[in-house]
Length: 279
Length: 279
DNA sequence: CGGTGACTTGACCAGGTTCAATACCCGTGG
DNA sequence: CCACGGGTATTGAACCTGGTCAAGTCACCG
Image: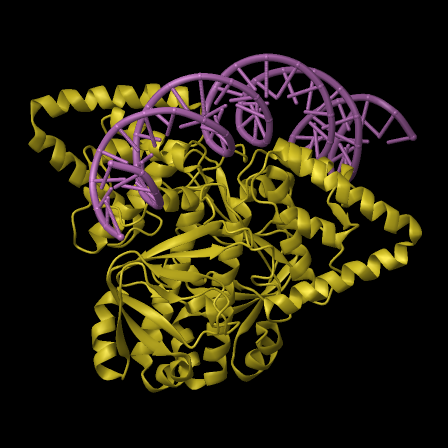
């Protein structure tokens, strides 16, 4: 199921090259001929597109165990650009070997399909994030996405180290970067998390999840409800940080279970939109 | 390259069932176990997700020659729901046969990968659409997407019959459905197109493309520039509708060429975002 | 004919973009 | 060591687009 678990065996069996990419380096450029697809084995990338006027739209961030450059398969030219946000490492699968590899190694083919499927699922989540109404909700969903991916990777879902700058986040969320700053402080003021530059510590995860669930509603109502939850959390919190933490873990586990598997695909609040009136 | 061109041969060679889906019928439901993936051979679907509060987020619209339900592969449960917007027909590939089929029929495997890749590319375009600043630009990009897909399918890129209601478009674009209405009339007032209920006729395609290119800029400036282009178009237009039309075709052809292939992936304005300042 | 749903249009308010100024972090070089 | 500069982040203020609410039209249908 988990591609990461399989990449190593696969790369043992077949001659795939591993390649290091330094922070800030470009893995492949927009509209260049594609000669390979990549599995991220370490680090993280931002995938974006640059318009003629120079503005760049960040499509997604990809981390370890994820696929990169697959969308170039159909055109043999990369519709996007991938840039390493930190020192990273990727497995390179040359295109001219791809199909042969799939035929020769069924396990590889299967793994590839699963990885792509997961990537497709992730894109649905990205849409969810961008579909949220309020800017704070978008940011909250984005952070929860990261958090869940961290957890799926066996790391702490509460301490996040953002590899990307505010501007990139802003582009990804579809808001101005000033708004990202404001939303960060808003979420911090609510007591959900603490921000120190690119370090984010989520304090009370269930409340953040509940907050991210919000669909529309003037952010005034939103913030009021949020404040209520926050004060409730405080009561518990003063009682003991320990109980608060365990509560978060329980909620998170429930969420994961709800999602159907260990990862987080679809487990996230499941998007919302302003346009479509319910029922 | 074109999956559609291959589905017939593939479905000849392998025992895939064809299934009719009536307008309004659901192909598969959210969070139900997935037992197959589908190729749309006729008609169109909307793919969406329903939140607990009943609001539905439209992720994308898929038409003939496209893939459906592939994202369920990794979880074996559909993260989304697909509903036929018109009487449609799909090829059904049962999951338990999928990998065997790919191994037995390399052409099928190859076709599948290409189709998925194209789907992934399309998701990038969707992001582009939602990333646009002004509502009218979003709508313009959406229409251009449709137009290009129509053309790739050999139909007229200037006459569109929208299969979905305003509300669905709104959800997909991330705006209120009232705004969709307003944007339609705005684009019509600019002389770019004509709207009669769900019939849309694009009058001057190059101008619409230029309009969709717009990144930020208060919609006031936008509309002014647009008006200039519109009046210029009128001059040409009064000179002769014929020359105007040919101009549109030339521009479109140039666009397709720029995109690298007959379809439209990445050929579209290539998104834009408010957040990231250029350079 | 009343009812329902899709679509359009108008008016108002608020959230977010924009512009501008400041603070911060960090590597470079005086 | 501190000054300097560039990139990054935060904060403030003002304008404006688009969301929301509300009314009204049109088409279809029981």
